[in-house]
Length: 193
Length: 248
Image (tube, rainbow over all chains, first blue to last red; front, side, top):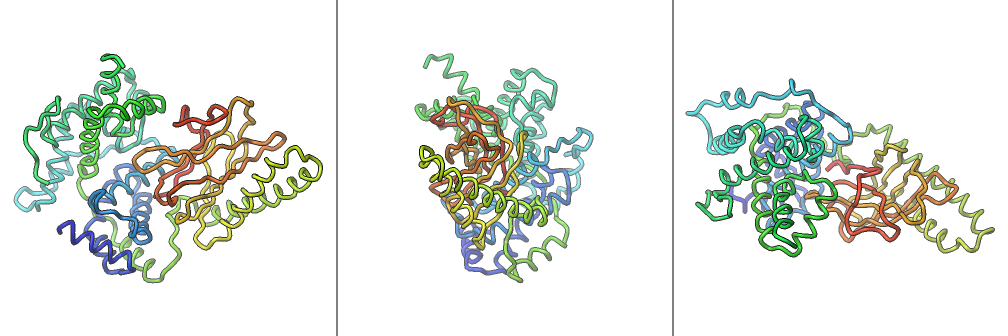
């Protein structure tokens, strides 16, 4: 769906169009739920936060500004922040053994039947998974668990300098992979939108 | 700034985009970014990477009941509360405690006004705080969120459409005259905005302040309080002594 049509749907939601909200839910609930589940690792909490996100869309649709980003980014940003807030306040620390196996999730989607959107997230996920584990883990802990350098160091048992270096190296690699930029900021290619 | 200092700060940009900086590092980075367009451009790239992390997870279908509940909620036009991590009974308790504390504070302030004219200005400000807070409590769209604190507790009463809310905190230690408590409103992108200074009046274990913003409180994701120098700071200089998430 083009961004302009999504913006129109949000406009309809702002006017109280319930069907427009449900259409946006049908389109984005799986992404929002995946993100909340990743952060909270608890299906009930993830359901609550997911519902919150769409109720917030229902009550705050008039605050959406298209020039600031897409509807999906707006919703996912709200979802991440809401999940991290809940995580921090409940002081959850999840054991490593509960971590989802990303390879099993990738294997669940047959190559021949993958939609363009599925291929997109698969590509993004693969780039993240292809990072060395010592670079991927601090990035995941920072972004999906909201941890700071010192908290990551404590979680992983690494010196804080090591955390900073590995996190930076991992992000540099993702920048090269996802944005087509080399380390000096030279544009190699413009990835498709 | 020398080249070494610039490179050190440049090395923090990736972590900045992920929200992984400590408070001190964040302050240094933000100060540097204001005068370094190259670093700002590099930060923009890392923020682009961070944005893609939102999409790097395989979609997961939520239970069907979630859609049913959502459709039911919006169809019945129920009051929309941020899904609260706080059960409804705790919300009522937080509101009741806020009202009781306000009534107690009102009585105590009335006695002090009659006997201590030298405190008139400070007390007038506190009365304004409680009057505003009472109005917020009665407002149809108001919510009461529980405050998380190591030393005590409290409540933050707000209507997300308004630009101010009332913070009540108990158990915070009285600070010396060189320091004050400062409230911060936190935006979804991590930017901290000053929400006001307050102190715990001597002889009381309770503090209240109207947290003010130039935007609706729905623009923010949380509130935190730090200990700062007497006249406040431009950015938090330490860890939160209390915090409250807005559930959005």
